[in-house]
Image (cartoon, rainbow, N blue to C red):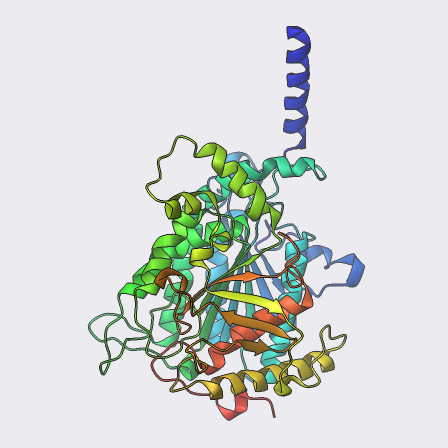
Length: 488
């Protein structure tokens, strides 16, 4: 019996090793392809683009930066016995920043960073890579309709989220191993990437912080930076930026008797189904709720969690209950936060997002799933109009309230309704709707599960959320975009 047990154990171990994916970069070619990396339907993208550190198209640029299981950028090829001519992945971070700066010298840029999650990587045909290309194409059309002159640039932050080359349900066995890897990635070189982006944006926009504090106005911004993290990618991104977010919330100074705008890390950070303990989120939540807000500020940080996400709603707390059994929490709040993600702790929620079927006149003619560039352009024009309507409804630049002091819901094109969770008895569950930190619970008809985050209605919501930057960039003075930036 003992021999049989060890034979079975050895067989299982051998299968696991054989199924492991290689711990090397997917993007190894430093030279920019001479062909346009336009997706070609079922064929994907042209072969020269598939290992390129940079993909270029007529609409956008897409760069890749990858991190190994320890959170390091990849080493020089010669140091690990590889051909330096065939593997130039060690140059990724340097080249991406250089190419980003070169793009900004030609025209203003709008930068989108995506940190993928569990079961994904930077392969040319990975579902997240394909979806990010589509997202950037839509963003480029957005800028074209807005007549902004901005170049759309994407940065895909890759790591070994897919460590097993096996099918479901076996790949799900990697959940806790990949969570540990994401934690190591979070304290590694991804911090350098976010710091480089922050320095680049401040320099380009003329922002200065110190003795002579200057806040650039929205229309002065040559560079806008939006960061998105999904699942364990949300863990990695949050760990890399959370301290800077806390610093920004508590370091504001009064201006003319009113609170200064919150100092931002980029323009907006969005986490989708983030997979980390709410106990890590609590200091940021507390810092945000302890601050006073004299006017509405577009959010600097948004966590969005589906109430149908079984991975963070069921699997995560089950595992945490087991591996925290010897830990001692002092309060019920601390125990709940230590076992659940931020989107599954009611006390930390700030908004609910659902599909009510309610529509707004400003969105008449909006199409749920546009099939042509013309239909998409029409949608974007209506989204601009609807955002203008919302900003016009701000009461003394604050979120509008009803007669009982309860915040009104905000309706986005597509019938998506955002409801602030104000009016509750406890101060810790009664967030100020003007607060620029959002923790949003979303219904299954918008995000059905942990990984299905690419539905048209959700992408449309993100577009409109980012549009707040055109009308309210979180600075002291809010101005509408220049006329040339508004659709006619």
